[in-house]
Length: 428
Image (cartoon, rainbow, N blue to C red; front, side, top):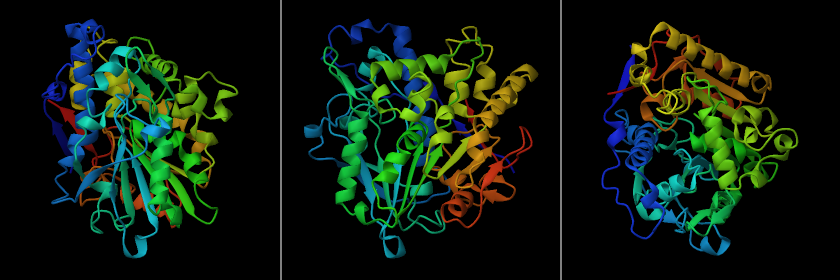
């Protein structure tokens, strides 16, 4: 049976947001339309990556894990956009998982202009002052064997995302009081976790969702290098396969966005030289140009009709000012035949992007034909009685089989609408 998650009012969920009076000349530059756009982006991200996971109906009474701020991070210039301390949530492992570590990099889009970063630094995506003091651990972070059979008793960490550049920025804007310190946050967090026992890990998995899924690709080999060769280290990217695709107007919305991130936050110095040596820096922020050169075993988990990419990259308001795609974006069942064909072409581009990557025996793949985003943190998509399947195997089982070398996993779904196990996102 198809399970549809209905998300209500995503464009209006920035409740209680207050414009700070401490930024003269910057907030005043926002006109009403720009504020609406920023609020809409924040609302979409909140529901896609956090609200849905927190309210997953298949995970009753999940553990609430407190926020730990990284003391001493400021001395290493490892601070959020607003200069506050970065942080993470750690739930300790036990038994056979006592020396196994899973690091989940939080997602949440990017800021790619000065004004969008000024806006962001007054939200939980740019400041630990606005972060939840505790969050539920569900899906791949669950501590229950019946919800997370392979990783339930590991040390599980969620590293909070407050830099706006997939943990890869390395600069600052003094005039706007902005700190672009994603790379330093990554390094400070890893150093802190190593001191808390991760240095003794015999097994480790770096994972991430959305912008965190991109970060898990960018930092995968760095993560491997933290450990001795005897430690089993792999990486998982969930909903991180962002494509350099043409939008519905013929433009390249996401390329323009990524170009802004790379230039504003000085990301180039932290991009892999294997890519920078032959492509421009913006191209090297796209996973399709990175994944084939990642040396560490990597698993790509992605929906072929990724909901965030449909909303924000393929058919954003800027590319569709007359709203021809509005109904289709809200509910895939309302897409007309030409829109479905456009989305099938997008899926084909995704298949092309993973072709070389999938030839490596060490890599894993689960590409389902769903309208979804971030399927590892949601209990109902990660591991439940009605979770999405490809060839009768779910996501958690597929990732576990790959990580523990139980089975080679290269699962590619048939094209929409053949899969009736999807938990498709429908916006109303």
